[in-house]
Image 1 (cartoon, rainbow, N blue to C red):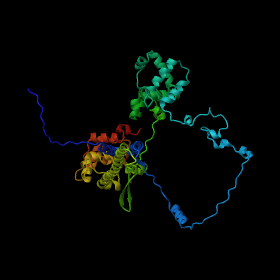
Image 2: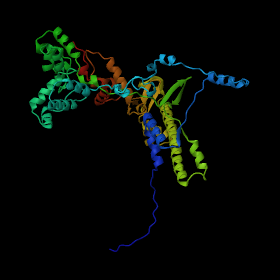
Image 3: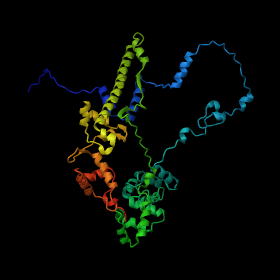
Image 4: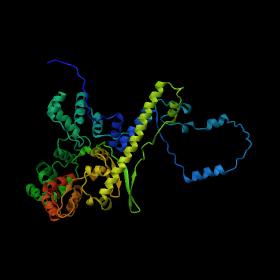
Length: 483
């Protein structure tokens, strides 16, 4: 087969994403906090970007400024300056230590040696987590170095609930020590605060807490040790028959058990609360809903006039410098345009959601309608992927509360002789049904499904179980009131 070179023309279409387009798509899916961080990074990297300072002038300041302008100019003679001499006695009477920072003294006010004083950074506090709290207690125990290392290894393998996630055999193999030594160190850690830590499961943790209360020989310990399955289902009658104790004693023991902590490690959790700042506000004013974008905290960008002037002075600026400024100018202009386009797209999406979910804004979650991304995309004439990016990690403040934009897109549940219902409205209905049930005979998932069937709503038992778990409602056997 002979090889030959040949020229051929071919016409094809392909999508090429420029860096500017990639940046616009990236900005579209960023959360509000991530957008602020990205803009700050661009300001640091691009010298042509500047943050516009918004100066608010109150009415009183404006009125005073106008009065100052209306005053006639008066030429006054300059006052004669009088030299004031301060005696050494006056200077000596001043307590210069009042002007100095105790921890970061200035050299001009230093009256004594502050070299041994701690820095301000040395006194900053941090919330201790479970590992640091236990390591601090372990460091106070007089253990040899190899046992101290073993203890730190065990503490490092505790989960956020305070339970040991690794077996004794694995610890012994990893640390090259005897299993008896591992058990001894685990017992020492179990004596530390909080009570019940370093247990292998909830049962062991509860028993350790009872031992700390000197109740390891009590009825409560017996119930945890042998009849925990009856306690889970609140079958107190079975516990009475198994322990041969009176109902009063069993109820008193259960009260002690309920007062224990099944997750002792969470007391020292270092997780910080996550505060949600809405990206959009939907407010009802004079009977009409008004959409307001939240721009607080987002820097207002502008292009530096100084560098614009440099571009105009062609004779005074080298061509390489002017080319660099042109590239940065193009990047800055595209960033500002992308941010404005992002805000306009969010406004359009929220406006479309408001149109589809008007009854939700008026009457609450029970009136949430089924909605998919395609409905909003066709309404605002955009692609579904664009709507998906806009609704990710964005929150809206409504008269019914703060919700993620994804919340308004739900699957539909068919109803006989009526409009389809949203899955979120079904969840809200399940919550109301459970709240109104008889706690002596709680409703099963099948019974709840039959209630929906009586209302013309087709919800299978498995669907009821799935929705019940999603909203954090226990099964019926755990909801039964103890007799």
